[in-house]
Amino acid sequence: MDESQKKPADIHECIDSTLLILNNRLKRNIKVIKNYCADLPMISCFYGKLNQMFMNIISNSIDALNEKYAELI
Image (tube, rainbow, N blue to C red; front, side, top):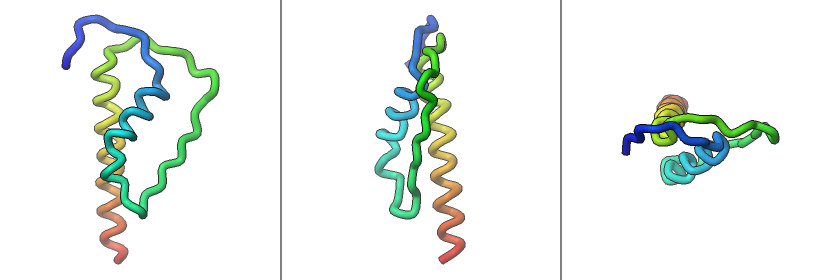
């Protein structure tokens, strides 16, 4: 869903929601360690686009790790 206006967003919340969506793709061989900055300010952004960006980065990372793991076994 495209948004026409920027709105405040918590980056930690965006990452957490993306990880929740992608949780079923995380296999036993992938461990996610979250080390968030405690005082990170809210940012003004297109919330949907920010979530999509995190989705793409994390999804691509999962694919790369699964591919590398498959090569090792």
